[in-house]
Structures are given as C-alpha cells and as structure tokens.
Length: 158
Length: 72
Image (tube, rainbow over all chains, first blue to last red; front, side, top):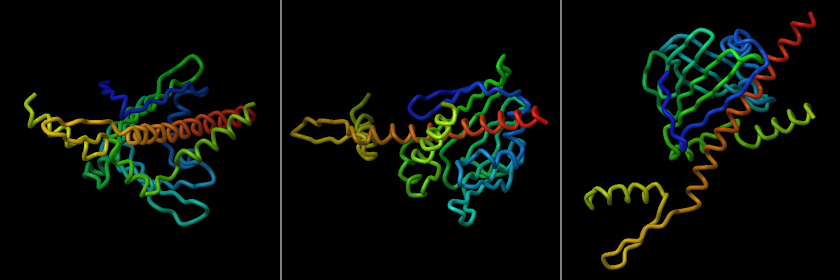
C-alpha cells in the first residue's frame, strides 16, 4: 500500500477495537449499521448510496434537530478490499465523475490484533484554504458536538 | 531560485493571508500572520475531532452489538 503523508493536511486515527475484524467491517459496510454511528446523536444519518466497489457512489444525508434530511457526504469509493480496506473520496462522485467541492480522501484499514481489530483511519485533505467554505457550509459535526460526545463517553466509563 | 519565481511564491502566500509584506525602497519585509496559521491548525484539529468522534462511536457500536450477541 502506498501511503503519502503530509502532517499539515493529513490526520491519522488509530484505535484497537475489541471486536473481530468481520464485525467492524460489517458495522462499516452495512448501511443500517453505518447510520447508527457515523454522525453524533441526536442527529440522524441516512445512507442513500453505498456501492461498495471502485467507482461506486457513496452518498449520505443528515437530519439535525428532527429536521429534514439534507446532503452530508457525497463521494465515491476508490478501493474496497474485503475485510481489509475502504478508500473513498469526495473529490469524485459515483462513476468517477469529478465533484463540485472536493477536499478529502479517507483510507480505512482493518487488521487483526490480539485484542480484536487494529482500526486506522488516514484522512488526507486538499488544503486548508477550503476551511472557510466548510464553515459557510455549516460543517456539521464539529468540535463542540464531538467534545460533548467524548465527555459523555468518558463519564460513562469513569 | 530567480527573483520573479520567488516573488510568485511570496504573492501566493500573501494572497492566502499566511504572511504580509511591506516594501521599503528595494527591501521587502515578510512577516508571518500568526492568526492565520492558528486558524489552519484549528481547522485540522476540528477534522481530527470529527474522525475521533466517528471512531469512538464505531467502537461503541461494535462492542455493544457484541455484548448483545453474547447475552442471547
């Protein structure tokens, strides 16, 4: 696997998840399961398209505060290696058509680990100049909400 | 690097607000815009928090599903 890295534009989240690789894979690739964790509660996620093949469409919607579902992610899968790797981008949409507002490619890798699954999300961004645009778009699950979620999680575990 | 090429880079940085420059006679002084750099860093931090959150929720989802299965 060729993985380019740029510390100013990339981020890597690595986590050991205490569940077998097949369970993590199905949580990611089964739309009904994916909808349950992709966005922070109480927002709701709806998967419109999840065509798990290179060039396959990946489209989700989000509903905040019980409102209508609005576009969230619109992208395309680049690589699907069963139980091992999912690569998608929003630089392209289904069928490799160039997207309107590209900014990232994400590579999800799963490996066996004695405790379960070694889960790595490597996310590469185009540049930081798009930042303002994201703010204007009302980039939803941002800092505040996620921090709150993290706090709740920590409290539950404490 | 030739001066014209160098100036292109400088203008690009200035255009994106990362630096500001001022010219006195033949000397151009460049200064970093700290605020802009901080904003860029904050943006990536936000992206990181978003992905951390997703990974947390995925982890909880699969481990909760496992517990349910075991208790069946």
